[in-house]
Length: 277
Image (cartoon, rainbow, N blue to C red; front, side, top):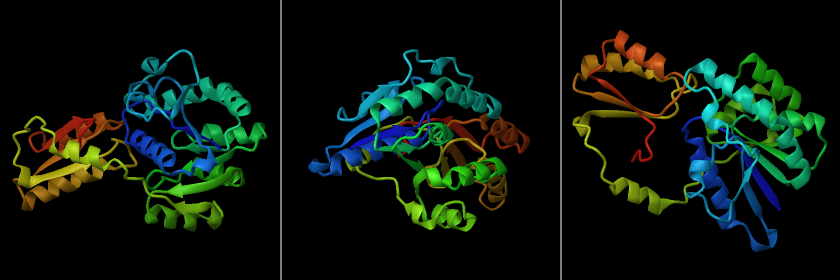
């Protein structure tokens, strides 16, 4: 059985950990008679920095010889969208040819899911598409129409939370038999304990008065709401401090909002952190 993962990204995101843990859990718990061959597709070089962290039993398939990730525009909503359009175009035929050649039984899609789903329209093969939904999706008109048109081409849809599962049921886009709750696996307990006990730089902030927000700095995560709410929290709890961990297209917007609300001394943006524990 061949299982491929498709999850191209342009910045440090938590999805990478989800992909790695998911793949490693399949390797670890699959029955021997299934003879699972598992691979992560490296579209534009995004997985280069993770190769040493991934179980050697998991193959990394380089879709393109040239690692163009470093040349793609980053930062801001429009630049990130442009980058994903370029990845879509640059990978279109190569991903199609890879699927045709390798014939994976399953293709699990996490990010830029539109490409492998769209390929089902022009390429007839037996590869089953599994759509992984991360968080609560923002269902705009284009996404709604796209999912509705291709819903029959998708084998199953996995949701990390019950809230996402229940929400997708109300949209009537997918057949309810396609929807499943599949939480992100937690199989690296020793790694968590190690990071928890690891010494990090002291922020010189009272640790009893901290609020920590972790995630991509995107519209979907809505850190803008958190910042505005924190302004009101300070009225009752003036000694509190907010820390935001993560990178994303809204970083500039969030910084501007912090300055606008005069919260520079109360909110810290620390960027992507390998150890959030």
